[in-house]
Length: 125
Image (tube, rainbow, N blue to C red; front, side, top):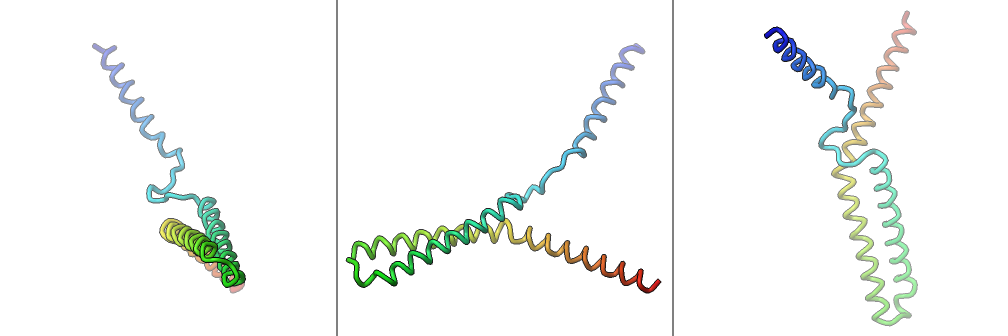
């Protein structure tokens, strides 16, 4: 009977030791869909799409009057498609990245303010 009790105690202790293991893992916030690197890549992609749409609009403005209707329709469709992509990616950035970046900026500002207050206290002493 003592062997069975010792075995039960040993197995139950193993469970407690294993349960504490999750603290070692660094997990992202469950509502966080994109990393900071992916957010920066999305922002760069939005800039590229807006630039590409602007180039198409400039091309239409330059050559639109001298080209035929099919060319104009094709270019306007291209400009609208690229602009729509930029708008969609901007929405994704706004929803998933903007708050995260604003939070980081706020935390940096708090840290710099705390550092400033420490320096000010040191000057008083």
